[in-house]
Image (cartoon, rainbow, N blue to C red; front, side, top):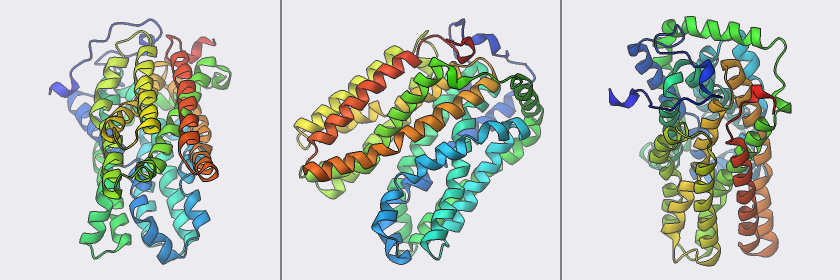
Length: 424
């Protein structure tokens, strides 16, 4: 019962005006809140395995499907592109059907896409079914902060922390368990990947049970979105929205570079392949406990700049360590980069804080994540190109340091106590 106790968040002028109190018709009853919190966490667990679970068996997938190296390389950028493109559709879908229904259908698309991907006879079908799953993930990315804002307005930091922790656990679990599952099922990569489709299917259960309880609040949010969207606020003209979008994009760039290249940086420094994999797991796993703490802290602050600076400094030290002594301090740098990786959780929290209304959160979430994921697309490719051109990691790490400094600056601007509705 202690998990969902009310946050003692001091009132903040730009955030609390639109928060309905406990007992408001949009806030579910106590039992319904537990069920919805469970649904959100289980959904979060399924928003990354489609990506992190593929890497460990990519060599087998390429061999069996005849996938070229070029296509395999592009797979690192496809998720960000899908998140950007499909994420733009989320506000319109939520305005028509309600965000809870859209998330439920999106989760069903994740389960179907992952299941069908495991049966793909060729590369084209593999890419198409992957896009189906990634489209479902994209609408979940955008609308999860909306559901937290609407149904847990007095527990914004706590519930954001819960589902952020679910995201981190899902990412790490898929990376760590796909190979053991594949081996246990006869070294069949198709069965190994299909297991994550089953997990997504199981996550549908609490949503289906909770659906009758959410219908009223979902309908009110849908109606409210339609009213407020005439005329719609121009989120694209808001400096707050742009600062948050660039901050989101730069932290996503850092995350994709880390997932794609950190093990190779360690291996080139003389670290064994198995240890390099464990170091990456540590980086991703650090996000799980910290993602539970960071949002609760962020919502208690008038501005989120201090947290942005703190996690950014950890990243700067981590990158410098990789540059100067990658093997000698390998575990220390991994811990620091794991702390820096919680910038994603800070960004999600700020999406809920930088808009007053549910409709505002929908538009801000779609804008910040879609623009942000587009910004993140070239990062991993550019790091690989620099490594190939220079034969080392000094130039890529210098680029990563520069991007992190820009990330901190944008995060401080996005963390100011302003909302997109303010128009400045």
